Amino acid sequence: MQNAGVIIISQSGGKEDLVRSANAARANGASVCAITNVPGSAVEEAAHTTSSINVGAERAVPATKTVIGSIAVGMNLLATLSPFYANAAERAAQLFLTDVDLPMLDSMVSGLLRAQTVYVIGRGAGLGAAQEVALKLKECCALHAEAYSASEVLHGPLQLVTKPLTVLILDTEEAAIQDSLDRAEARFTQSGSEIYRLRTSDFGLADLTPAAAAASLSYVLYPTIKMLQSPWVSTLTPLIHWPRLR
Image 1 (tube, one colour):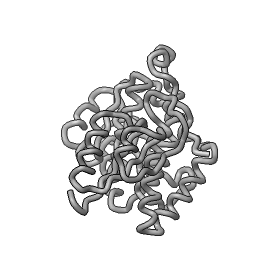
Image 2 (cartoon, helix red, strand yellow; image 1 turned 90 degrees about the horizontal axis):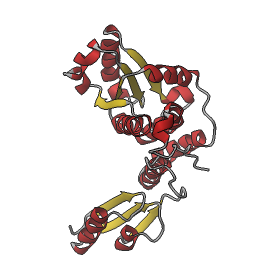
Image 3 (spheres, rainbow, N blue to C red; image 1 turned 30 degrees about the horizontal axis):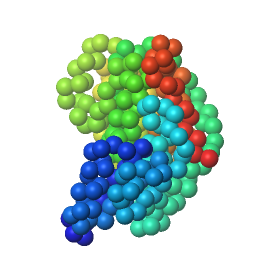
Image 4 (cartoon, one colour; image 1 turned 60 degrees about the vertical axis):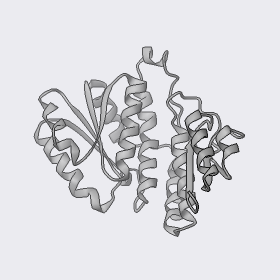
């Protein structure tokens, strides 16, 4: 691994598999950078350098603010290569310092409270955000939610619209993915599904990098998911905490 760089991202920095990976990479000649939230962790000790997420203790079992913080640190690293990432990070940070008042979210909560099965659809960087949102709907709300790419969902999973289906489309507004998202939205609309499409421009952000857009969509949806959390589920999983990055 001579002349290779390895980036290891971990909230706690204490998982054995990541520690072993860091040690093995370093022993074989790689330069290892850790992105962690807990100072003095085993992964940090194994790495050559560390970029701290620095968002405080993660109080939610399903991590929220450290997910966004990890993306933010990654954008800061990329900003050293391209000013575009620095500009996008600054615009996204403004969202993190304000309360989001978006009427669509109230409607979305009502729709998700009625939902039996939810498809969360994304493409490009939005697919990662879709996977994160689907996971949180399962963990926090005991709601059956599956994440799909806008292209893959039309092959097979589309057939489940014979049963009540709610579709949440996360749109990072990347130009290259618009045709795919539009096609998926049209097919699910035709099938009678209840559809919500959330764009970064809905809350005043435009021309973000894909990573910044995905982080912003996740940030907006975390408190929305908290509103859906069933009382009995909260006894199993601590409430999601609004991921303030002040």
